[in-house]
Length: 254
Ligand code: NDP
Ligand code: 8X3
Image 1 (cartoon, rainbow, N blue to C red):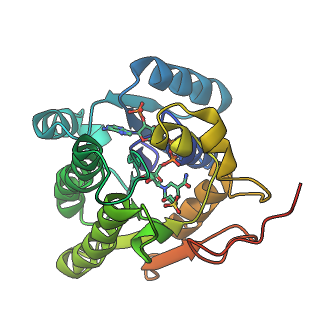
Image 2: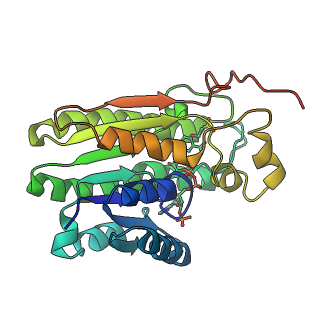
Image 3: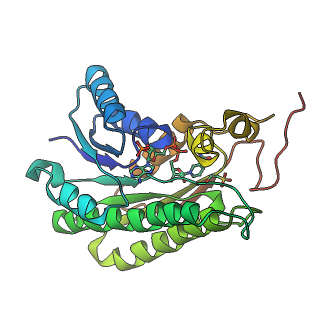
């Protein structure tokens, strides 16, 4: 079999673009997301465009039992995962700490922290027995600097930053590479999800800037995965040219 990349959150945005990127470079891909119809479309399209195999693994990363049984239930050949792109995640709401919804907080912590952990743990077990592997964790600039109304989303991405460091330290003895990618504003379905379908508010995030595109993130993920065996990018932060931090933007009027 070819090399294998397992990408969570591959029904949209970064994960979907990353699945195409790895497939274009000859990887067989395992793709995850909750929306089975979208996974099927992505799988059909990748198989039609590239001469690679696609394994669909629909599950909700928040469901511990489903994560472990789906991943442990992979056919033996598919357990030889070379790269995990631990990407599934979301923001829910953007509200003051004292006004935010507890349900939103629970969704973000359960997805971005607990789900993130379950997937990494299940796949690390294979990488350890295979004797190699690369875990690429999707962080954010929100995990580097807190911004107003970012509270729990930022906290969940600070957790990704800490866990990225922790995994690299604890998996060092197994020679597993661990990398965090920390993007700034990128136009995907992220803001539409965050603002619960409010298209006008979602669009305003990108007013006057050309934000990052999902394909930019896919390029960077693939670059990190394609370096020689002795080289590991630990942590990589990127923004569009019109963004310097969570709060500093150079927006074009109009
Ligand atoms: P999208 O909303 O476009 O994609 C998110 C993906 O995550 C979808 O495929 C979605 O699939 C999946 N997902 C969400 N919740 C779950 C779940 N419980 N179980 C399984 N899959 C899930 O957003 P992005 O591509 O922008 O976001 C990807 C990652 O990048 C996230 O971790 C996000 O926090 C991070 N990020 C995004 C930035 C941005 O500006 N866009 C910047 C920095 C980081 P489905 O709904 O089918 O389950
Ligand atoms: C997404 C980037 O700045 O909207 O992680 O939090 S930001």
